[in-house]
Length: 228
Image 1 (cartoon, helix red, strand yellow):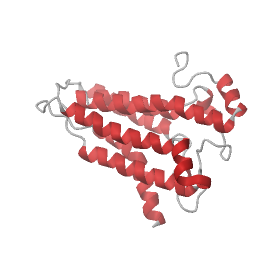
Image 2 (cartoon, rainbow, N blue to C red; image 1 turned 120 degrees about the vertical axis):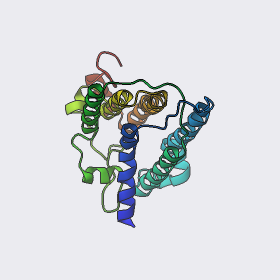
Image 3 (cartoon, helix red, strand yellow; image 1 turned 90 degrees about the horizontal axis):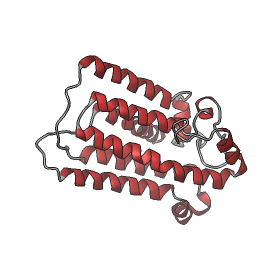
Image 4 (tube, rainbow, N blue to C red; image 1 turned 180 degrees about the vertical axis):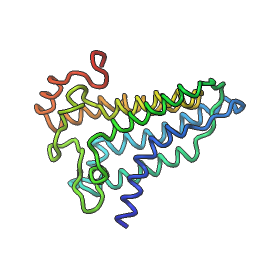
């Protein structure tokens, strides 16, 4: 059972990048109403995701077990299962596609792989086990002081380099799959990352206080240096 959960969590994490690289369903002839269904489908997933990360939800459901491995595992199972459902049920989207030259698509694929490497820089499968709270590991990457605050390397340039890398991967995919469906989903996923940053930082400030304020002072940029 533990190995099944571990595999499920790893597949779920990599499926985000796999879906972006593979491309989302596109059909020039389908009705534009599919956009509304796609938006509703993704919105339902995002609502569940955000609700499960809120402190109010955690206290109501888990009580004293907030931050425990069981909380993280339930979150991973629900988030991954609903994300895979989005991938399975999302409809094709309409609109014309651009004919991008092969060399440019190849360059974009290289850029995507570099962004993927940047997202997972310094991580191992064991580290991902900590992220998903696989049985036999300690919970890692939490908001609380029980885990180390990352402030060096790429974290000294911007406070959210993993989100930066994910957004860069999405931008590269728009050249690989130059169609409205890819643009729609990249905007949805990238917008979620950007929108989640203030919420995540509010929780970090609440949990870590002066430690995170000092980090914000040393590293003032969230996502893009000299911009935001």
